[in-house]
Length: 482
Image (cartoon, rainbow, N blue to C red; front, side, top):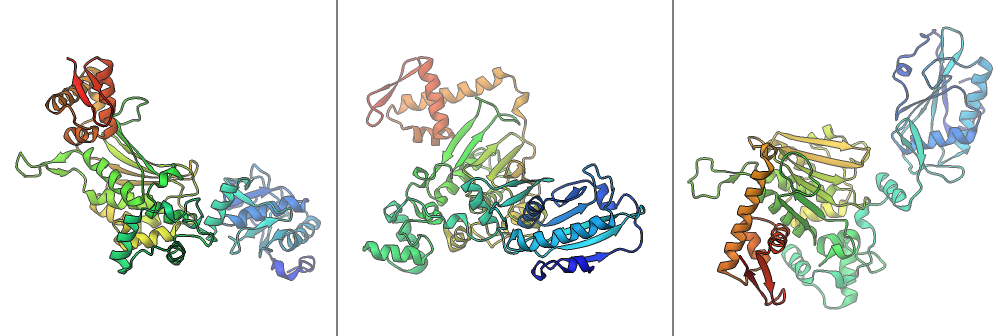
């Protein structure tokens, strides 16, 4: 370490080494250009600006700043006098302008021209979040950086640094929001314990089970697992499902659609049923009167739906989306993969507990569970034609299950599609003639459509003057006009 660098405070732990042998004018790493882990600076004079760059790297995955390199990758280097000045500045900034101080390393790289490039390495921080001296948290955004501005983003950052988790956040729901029957059954079956009648005892029990806060309200996990109607307070944490004809999203044309709300188990059951009723059934050697088996094993969707509900990012106010197309099924979860988790690691069975309370209760039988980190590999084992995509730009994780041997309805004419819809409406009218007081739920079960699909067809029949409702929704009846 040279004499000037040694003047930096010891707690910065700035290590400076010098390369004696000349290196090529264009360094291999520099030829790759700037990205999330690599940045170029022609020179540095402003300590606050350098501190913000260090903070951004430390709050992300770490990285390297090459000082003496233009933005276009041209290696001009620094004069020997500038090298001493910059090393001194680095030591002061790392120890005095960053909270907490960062242990950085520098390396002096000698160019053929005799000038020097300083390679400044900032490790991934162990004490996140890091601030600059003005109290600003910076994060890397591609080759640039950005500051954390919103409360939601700050919470997500603390979640990313494993300092708290979304499922532990308080809600406005008290114990009265519980589905008492569901919670009583869980206590009885899992712990052979009764649900106390006294409110103070209820709160004590919920806190001990990590389902309520010290302030006496349910946390997000408690609400999602055992709330009677969680969607009243958290309407974004649902699954929205649509089945489209063909291979792309249509603005107004769909074959089936439904929103699944309620506690996680009800959402899971509803979404799984939606997928299975929209899959093609294969006879597979069975009799012609048999129901057949789904073209894709149901366990595939069990695993992927559990993964979506338990590991989605609940800091993102958006629903899980379930799209059924003629050639694939997509499950789109809010939030990209956390920390250093990658698609390759998921395929290998690795996991990262973004919502540990939810995961612990799933392991207690709330949802089908076969072991931490084994869900996605098990789905792929049963159906290898699954693509996983970590979309960091749109903050999404997408699991795509490809279907085999399913004809593409987009090859049909619009006339053919309308004939299919007409047959569905004829079936609805036939059922209503037989039973004028039949409910939409009963019609949905008989026609193998969702309730919303039945409602859409009924609106069409009313508009065409073929059907009308006599009397109220409850206690009334249908009347076929044609």
